[in-house]
Each structure stands twice: as C-alpha cells, then as structure tokens.
Amino acid sequence: MRPGRAVDWLLLPAGLLWLAGVLAPLLFVLRMSLYSRGGIAGEKRYDILFYQPGTWSLESFRQILAEPFYLRMLGFTIGLALLVTALTLALGYVAAYGIYRSGPAGKAFLLTLIVLPKFTNILVYVFGLKLLLGRNGFWPVVAGETLFLLPYATLTLAATLETVPYSLVETARGLGASAARAFWSVVFPLTLPGLLAAATLALLWSLTAFLGPYLLGEPRQYTLAVEVDRQMRQDLDWPLAAALNVTLMLLMAGVASGLSLVRRRAA
Amino acid sequence: MLRLEQVTKTYGARPAVDALSLEVPEGELLAILGPSGCGKTTLLRILGGYEAPDSGRVWIAGADATEAPPERRNLGMVFQSYALFPHMTALENVEFGLRMRGVGKTARRERAEQALRLTGLNGEASRRPAQLSGGEQQRVAVARALVVEPRALLMDEPFANLDRNVRLRLRDELKALQARLGLTTVFVTHDHEEALALADRIAVMNHGRIEQIAPALQLFLQPANAFVARFLGVGV
Image 1 (cartoon, one colour):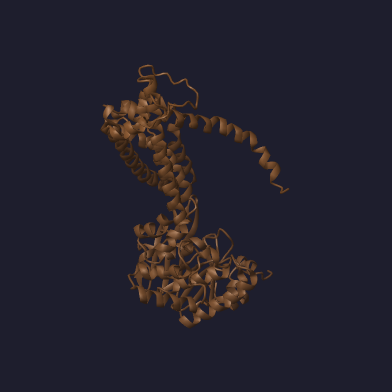
Image 2 (cartoon, helix red, strand yellow):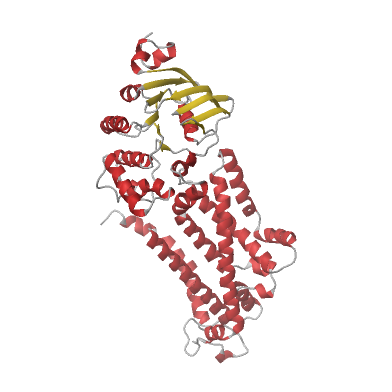
C-alpha cells in the first residue's frame, strides 16, 4: 500500500460533495436542455423523471441555432466578452505596473484601492455605477463589466510582475535598450503566463456577464446569461434556458481548453 | 575615464553618497571597499546612470554624462544577481546588447560566441540561465557586458554569490581578462581580501565618503585614519 492511499480516502467526503453539489445539477441541466416540449404543449411542467422515453429532443438547440435572435445574442455575448477582456487586460496591466514600480507604502495603498470596490455588495456597486455612467447603453455595459473584472486581472498581473526583478530592466537599459524596448523585450515576455491567466479569468467571467448587461444595458445589450434568466423566470421555458446555458458552457469549455493549449505550447 | 565631482545622493535624512569626488584613469581596476550601508552600491549605480545624484557631476570619457540614461553611457554592468534574462539562452543574453545596437544576425552571433569563449564558456551557449551553475551564470553576465565593447565595466559584488573555489578561480580569470583588454573597471566589494587580490587601487568608503584611495600596499603601510586601519584588519 503506497503512503498516499489513506489520504485518498480522506478526499472522499469532498469528492461526494462535489458530485452531489456540482456534477448532479449539471447533469440535470444537460438533461433539461434535451427535453422535448412537444408532448406536454402549453403545460410547461418539467417535474418529470430524469429518464423518460419520448421526452428527448434537440429542439431547443435547433431553435437557438435557427433563430437570428439567438444567433445575434450569441455573437454579441462573444464580442462583448472579447472587448471587455481586452480592456481589462490593458488597464489591469497599466495598474499592475504602477503597483510594481511603487515603494512599499504606495504598493499597499494602491492594492487597497484596487480591492476596495469588492468590499461593496455587487448590486450596490452596479447602482453606484449607474448613477455615474448615466443612461443605459452599450458603453455603460462595457465599463461596468470591465470594472468588475479589473481587480482580479490587476492582482494576477501584479503578482506576476513581482517575479521579474527590476535589475533585469536596468541591465537591458545598460546594454543600450530604451525604456520602451527594455519593457517589450524583457518585462513583457516574462509576464506572458500571468497575462494568459488573467485573460482566461476575464474571458470566462465576461462570457457569463449578467448584472452589467441586465442593469446597465438596454435589451439590445442582453447576453445569453440574461436570456437564460428571462426564459427561466418569465417565459418558464426551462428546456430552452437549459439549452442556452449548455451553449454558453460549451463556449466556455472551448475557450478554456484553447487557452490552456496555448499555455502548454508556451511552456 | 570616469570622474565623479562632488556627488551627493540622499535617501531620507542620511546621505548615501556625501559630496564625493573620484577619478578613475583609463585601464585601471578600482575596488570600492566598505562595510554594508556605506554607499558603495549607490556610488556604482550613479556611475551607471541607474540613480540620479542630487547634486554634483558625472564625467565619462571627458564628457558630462550626469543627465545621460544608462543606455546612452555605454558602460558594462554586472549586477550581484547577474540579472540574466531567464527567457533567453546564454547566447541570446550575450547577443542582447548587440541586437539593441542593430548589429546584423550573423555578426551578432559570431561576436557573442567569441565573447562567451573569452569568458571560458563553450558548450553552454544554448542553455537557459536556470540550467547554468553560479559560476557559469557569472561568466555569461561578464560576456554580455563585454561584448558591446563598453568604455568601462562596473561590477556590484560580482563574486558574492559563488563558492569559494569558484570565486578564487573566476577572480584570477577576471583579473587576467581585464589586464588583457586594458578595460577600465570599477567593482564594489565588502571583502578586503578580494579587493587586495584584484585591484590596482582601493577606495575605502565609510558613511558616503571615501576615507582613503590608494594602492593596496600603501593602505596597509600608511592608513589615513583609524577606520581604514581597522577595516583592513591592521591593529591600531
């Protein structure tokens, strides 16, 4: 018996909790997304057994892929996520660099400043932003989502920058590099892993953007996550909501595995 | 070749370098020797342009370089940590300065390989810094500093992170290399044995000032004051 075996058994409660708390609901979501509404038209009751013949169908997915409304929404969700991620990374890098180059006192101050918004309840935060940003629309949504994500990206990037000794920059300067060239040829390549981690975080998070579009946007800016909520609670079309959710999850799985492939390639 | 004129640099209340003047003639190997916190590293950083003096002037090869950033000074610098670029191979590290100067690819490679051989490296060119021993890393750092043909070489505690055996060997090699190239060199150390073994002249520093600057023998025979005598281990 190898020494790790006892430890493996100690993982059992956590494993069971994970199975019951995460995997089981996901399976139900998956099952719901494959539900056929045809048999019980008009009734919209989904309190049915997990497996029941005659209730399986791809119709919800077919609807998503066939209706321009959903395709446009899918495109908007992806586009918004890409734009928010790009802005988050750019602003986060600048903020992280400021932290990197500050003295101990400045570092503590800036870090507190970055984390402070997270001390607020997110709804209160969004309503505060609403006052600040004025009328609902595309840019308030982008600004709101970027501001949610900025602290996470900044902290990730600041942690990566701390691993780059400043003497590397000074050495590059001493060897004839301008400040800009020293940055692009030394600091930037060394922070790529952190940038990739922050990009993963920001992309996955912004793909599920809900509060920003819902509270700061107009219906044109609604994302898949908002539509999931609408189908669940207003239209009571759970199969469609589940199918939208599964679509979103597939998208995220694609993004996550794509980025981890890049990471492995780079390593 | 290098000249400091009444240079002062203050951190907080205490001056790290206090109205200090110093002249290093062409081809000299000068050691700056002193206890930790005496301002010797700050002095070196001011020479290299990594720190701006509060007052005073810095002259390099007869020109006022006080305002010049490091990339305009053309001085080789070897940091205590060697500061090798971890994402580049040994060869790419050495090529860096040439790349910044726009030297073409083939010429660059040739000169970098030559510099590596000069410092005693042959088969390690394609390795990353993490795969090199401390001594090899130091050789790469020296080759990287020398390949751009700097006007002078600055070194901050270049032997501090090495085992004794390696340290002694690299010390002798560096001395021979410096003599062969006739390169003006300033290095900082807290180890008086190292200063004695290497330097043409030794500047003994304390509290931001140079207490005495003289060849080793003269320091021993005629220490300027009690601090110099004590620091060199001569009983008073």
